[in-house]
Length: 358
Image 1 (cartoon, rainbow, N blue to C red):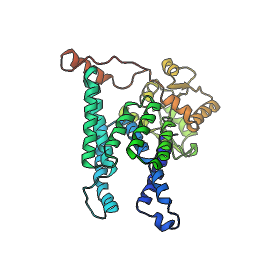
Image 2: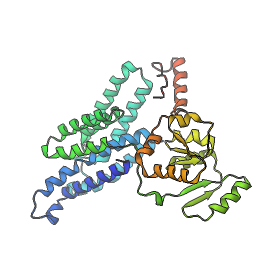
Image 3: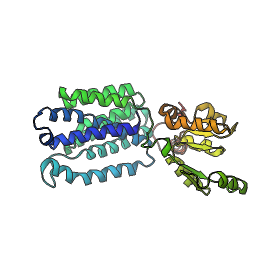
Image 4: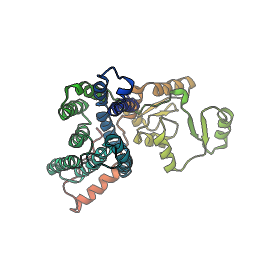
């Protein structure tokens, strides 16, 4: 189950739920009174999946401030249509749309994560719990959609994200208790089952025939002559000049996989969660191959095509490489150095935790 599949399932459930909330069942199924109840039960699938995707996005986004800002803007923009649909007027303070719940959830996660990184372990959990309770009370006071239960679910799926069985079980029990309607239980159960089936990959609308290749061509005249001979004008092949480091990193962050003979890219791509196929018979980065972030594809066309096709078509194979432990670090060395300096000069509570590659 990819991220795209989860989004589609949640979106479909949400559309069915909202159609029932607008009582469209009376228009299309006037003789079948159970459509409303069934549709609302299916709609219970949506919120847990969106919360799960929210926590995943929070953990992987490169800019949490922008992530929260977007949710806040969507909350404000959505409020007028929400009030018009539910209450028939432009503004109503009776309840707020679900984006406010998600926005408060991201602010809560930001505070919880900061406390975990900057507070002594003995005190951190108590302060984190206080933040969660405070956010839940604020959601209840503001009457956001799913209010306190929604905030608690965000906290549960974030805290137990490394133990998905526990996260799904705790989340299901919490939402079942919050909804308190037996008819909603099947929808909630399906929702957390789908979350448990998540394989850590994004998924794509496109099959392998819709991918295209971006090739920053080396400045060597010999290389350029060969590239022009074999690749210039080929379908779905985009040839560009070599890029500065920051632009190359930006390109890799948005690509699906990296195929290269560059030693530097073998180190950089795993930090971005991108599988690397090394088009050489050997590599000076054997630790990447040993860790599973890179594979030697050699120089034979059939082997390279076969290995690339497997990553394009097999989500499990892709996830094994994309989620492998990066032997070159996790990208937070600078933050750890800063924390260590602050702790050394008494400007930080508690000694920073040692780095562990596991």
